Image (tube, rainbow, N blue to C red; front, side, top):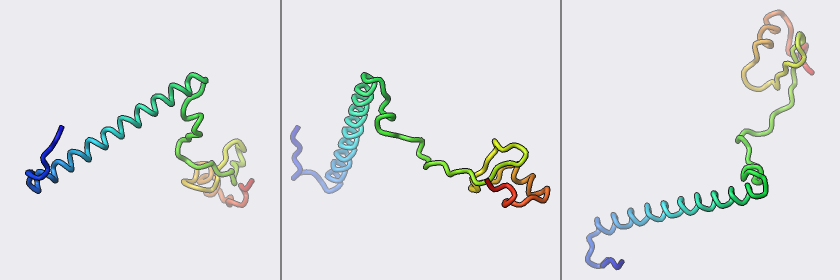
Length: 103
């Protein structure tokens, strides 16, 4: 397919450039999808998922160690980050301090 660039207007050239850029992105996206599918297939042949091999995670960082425990139920813990659990709010309202609940 030959295009006579010399006889195109500036607007036609800009549109052609836009169309070419879109086509290139589409090709890249399609090739990436094909490569990912092939990699997933190869990993599956060995009994793994691609995420397992790449060490993919949920995107969250490592969990922090708990700093506080519920005096009434030590299995309930809190790291001290984020929203206070109800048991912390209740204990504070009952006159306890965070130091009382430290692990």
